[in-house]
Length: 360
Image (cartoon, rainbow, N blue to C red):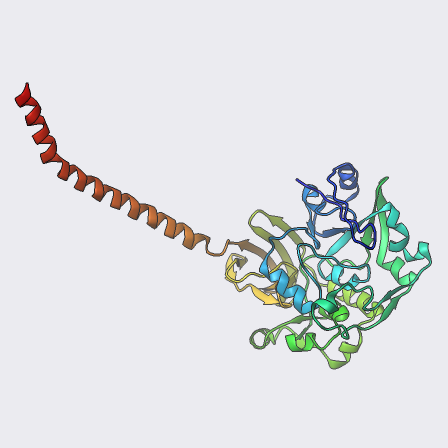
């Protein structure tokens, strides 16, 4: 298993790749045992794998198609890895990222209280998203003050090489909303603020709005102007008010339990894939809804609910059926050929036998 560090050493962007496990045991001892959260790292790619955790920035060229749909409409970039800057606080909370692993040499830039610096968000440090989407003017500018930055990330623990920061605005996996917006409304907001908006409301299609209009209301227009850091803190607190009681992943998908007072549409930041997931609630099949342009939500009733979501590789059953049918056809064909050859060969063999006997 390869762990890699990706470092831009100079303006020529030369890169230093290396593999190592030196700090894994120390980090594992710091992080909580219950893995109902994601992590991120700016020092080593794929640290989540040996730690047995999920991450928002997995380095891999094979990922679910739903990830690309989500990142595109939210205004973020994704190639073989998701690269999110320090300023993407709402994005990390939306995806239930609770801890970030930072090299000790980056302490000043990750703790504005220590560095006594302000972090200004604009097109110069929001990555190359505007260039990728040909929408450079679709950025708003915001300054995160040292106090806010200190409130957002709090040191949870450290090793000789790594500092573990905890997201103080963490929202657990599986939470509900009171409001919805349409895909058209989402793209009216600057790309650097769409994650903030997604913590206020679910993105639903017209068909879903008709289906779940009794559970969610349309987001008031005034809320589209409330996308500051302080609004974000309030929205995270609101989302934490109604979350799943438990959430566990397994080799086939995930399970969760809820106990809400009313029927709800529960959001899970898991990439949606058509014809890939099935879900049951209390043993009864339910629809897996594609929300937020590429993630999923599960409808659950009021009271105790056991959710089981299972992943099925698209086309696997069909390919197995076709393969078995092909093998059967091949066996039948081989038998037919064998029998034909056996019948054809009998007179010749008999003639050869008679010729041999005559010579003797």
